[in-house]
Length: 128
Image (cartoon, rainbow, N blue to C red; front, side, top):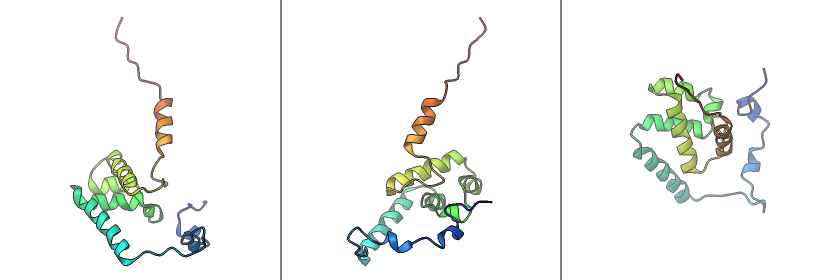
């Protein structure tokens, strides 16, 4: 069975230091106050939602960590007694709020639009 791109086995040879380099090859640094402010924003976001645990699980998916731990929108939905669509909607909202890139659990806006445009409308005709 092929390895998933986000699996721990694939991550072993990944050059994590390359993520921390900017074009000038200076390491990116963040002050403690920057990190704390980012944490405050995330916590404020979670507190605005009516189901904090659901929001945290969806945030986990939005960040891509669900892929590594075999967490899926389906398992999150079952855990919280809601639909997969509800999990998808909240995960998408989190990605947009935090300006996160697409991962295995989400489709790009382009893919969603393309699917929407390719669907043929359901036409029901009554008795003539």
